Image (cartoon, rainbow, N blue to C red; front, side, top):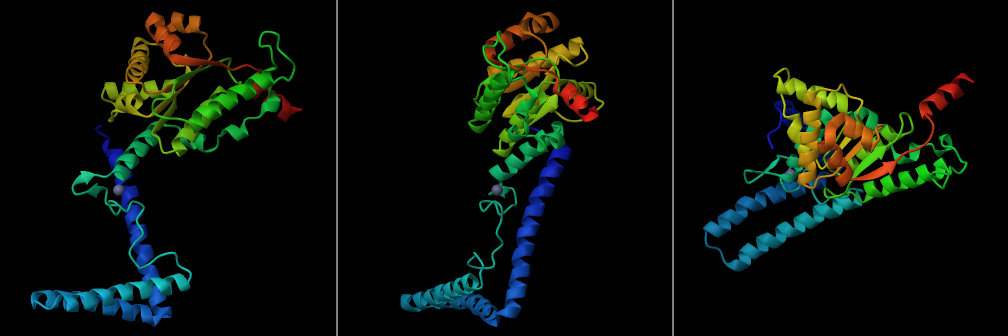
Length: 327
Ligand SMILES: [Zn+2]
């Protein structure tokens, strides 16, 4: 997947910071402990001296016993250094930098091939750029307030809205905990202001925290971004991110400005993800028949056939909070 230059730049900056931090930490520790425990500096000098000694012995055709003696001596020095560090309270054997990724030493490449850690950073940055991550940081399942939902049994539901929403939250929590890039797609339906966005954000955050590439966004700004890229007003390839990310969370479907371009974008993205078996979470205050009326049969049938419907119920929480803060 080709990434926007700004995404590559951000990922490289994070990778370089990891490497610099690991190296600076190791150098600072070597410096400060070397002052406190002079024996550590002696060991390092002796270990450094053993390398030319070994080379010399090999070139001179020395007996195997002599080579073995030098190797054993070197191992003893390594062990002594590890013992000193452990005694001093450090969970390490030497002053080698402790890289985040031991495979590529935070360089991003292993023998010229892009390392998985760098691939993950690129994906994370691409998702972060598209997502409203500042909102996601504040939101989780625990902060959903069930006391905003009516506790009396609703005859249509057979349970109280509070119990119904507790079940929905439980379902979404479970979905998030067991998420895989082949999980089901979810359709969160219900009126405005009853916690759908909160659920969307909590799912997006939870799945992101497990290391998956998640794009969260309201439909309107995402369509605007696609439009800007399509007509050359912005650079980037958001469509391939929206299609290719592990989880796409589309909040507020039906609230965007309706246009043939918007409808085509939404259809292409939902359809491509369904065909490739990638999950999407959609929230909307439209019923299936309203979706059909607005977007046509194609989109509505994709959603009806491919998404698990979750009906959110309750009164407008924003209005309840507003009334409470006034009274
Ligand atoms: Zn790596």
